[in-house]
Amino acid sequence: MKIRLLRWFTRLYHQNIQLRLTIYFLFILLPLVAVSLFSTFRSQDLLVEQTTERTRTALSSSMDYIDLTLQNVEEISTVIATDSNMLRLLEKSGPGLSPQAVLNFLDLLKQLSSITSINHMISQVSIYHSPSGVLLSTTNGSKRVTNPAQQDWLAQMARFSGSGIVYTMSEEPTPEGKTFGDLIGADGISLVRVMDLNNPLRQPNLLAVTLSKAKLLNLIHSLLPSENAQIYLMNDNRKIITGSDDATAEQLSARMADEDMFTVQVNSKYYKWSLLLMQPRKEVYAKSEQMQLYTYVIIGISVLLALWISWAVYSGIASPVQKLMQGMKRAGSGNFNVKLENDRQDEFGYLTQSFNQMILDQKQLIEHGYEQQLRLAVTELKFLQTQINPHFLYNTLDSIYWAAKNYEADEISEMVLNLSRFFRLSLNKGTDTFTVEETVAHLHYYVRVQQLRFLDKFSVAYDIQEESKTIPIMKLLLQPLVENAILHGLEQRDRGGELIVRARLEDGFVHMTVTDNGVGMPQDRLRYISGELERVFAPDKPGLSLPPWENAKDLYGLRNVASRVRMVYGKRSRMEIDSREGEGTSVTVRLPLDRCKEMLQLSPERADTDNEKEAGGSV
Image 1 (cartoon, rainbow, N blue to C red):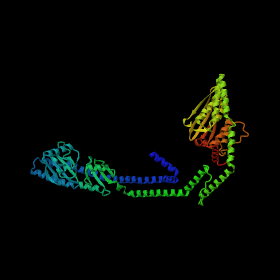
Image 2: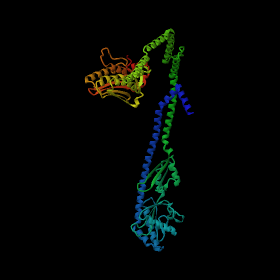
Image 3: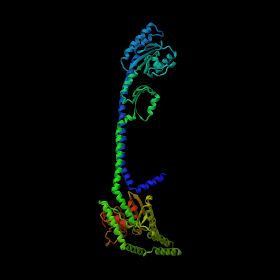
Image 4: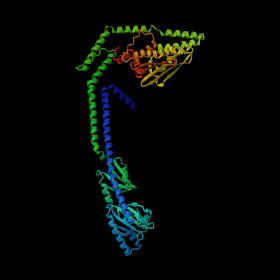
């Protein structure tokens, strides 16, 4: 079904000019649409990057302030935990609640209350006296922890913390189903450490400095960019210390996984705390949505304009051209009664009128004898073609071959066989071009004849690049070059002669080289031959003209090949020769690859026309 639909669309595309014009104009719009969409999406990305950077900077600044606050609180806790007066009062208070112990605890509360005023982020300070089980608090006064399990839990916590610091959430569970916040009467995160830090024989008395949850929230709440945004201060276990709402850990994880939420998180440099800000992405993209809407409107208007322009071009230009083309097709099929309607006064009207007049003149020309003259010309051409009958040559060579076989003259029979194959391909191929592979096979028949003639005094090698084998080239292009290499280079060697034929593709050209290790030529002779080749391939020489050969006394083979190459392959073709006396000669023919694939497929008349265009129109 998809294949049939594709075929139907392809047929409709080739038959409908208006559809092609519309597609062309839409293709022209594609870069504009691509750039517009890229700019829109890129602006959104830049907006997100800038927003992320600004948010991260603000969160980092707040996180630095929180770090500074925590360091200050830790320093205060160190002062309390090492205060000798407080330690002395705790030491004097025994297990029982004697009047002196009560006075000691009151004195401790006074000192703790004065310390809380130093830092506004501290909501309360609590001290647990392990021998008596009394818990002193700056906000709740004093109370006694009577539950043994809770007493053991607090003592274990003192031993566990050692001289370090433990940040404990108010939701931390304790024995008997209570939380740490219920136990000390505080709502927030508490800095917990043991008292009497420098005494290894210290009692398990605990100090808890609780940070104000509301003041922490006020500190970070100002960073919220909108009402729908949320911000949270979390510890290393991703538990919320304080936040803009009462989200649970599960809700927070779900929001962070939501792709519609814009999330920025900053970690503390000194603590395992982090600030997390979340905002709906549609709020972040709100500023770019209007620009995106403008882009879509512009794209829509551009598509409508493309449709309108394609219709205008079709009705004003393509439709008259299509009618003229249809009239030409009918005339080409032999219908000379064609007459196109013409009601236009512009250039297309003139073309239509000229076409009608041309058809009328053509019809009259045919009626007055053109057809008879054409038939006479065709008859004469066929007569000329039959003047040379290649079958006579084949039959004669075949008779010589069998006669040589009968007299057991193997070398003569092989020579005749190769010569027969050479002429059969030369005369009866039915085309003016061979592929490189066919050219080499054809050339080898001639080379074999020469090897038999010279009693195998030279060898031949073919170095043909695989990619070049299917390239079509002019017939009998290399044979004169090989003939020169054998007769003028290798014939004068006694033994060890070597002939190499190469073909390769390089930089859009077909390079074919014939190399021999013969006697070579002197430098003055080389300069003379190179100069003659330069005359043939001169840039200002017209493509169809030949150099004057009236006074030429030599170089017939080279001149022939060079002239044919120049006429067929144009001014980009080249033929070069290089030789060293006593070392050998190399001749290279360079043909444009595009002319090889296209030019030689044309008729002789079309090829001549192309050469005229390449030469500037002069013949």
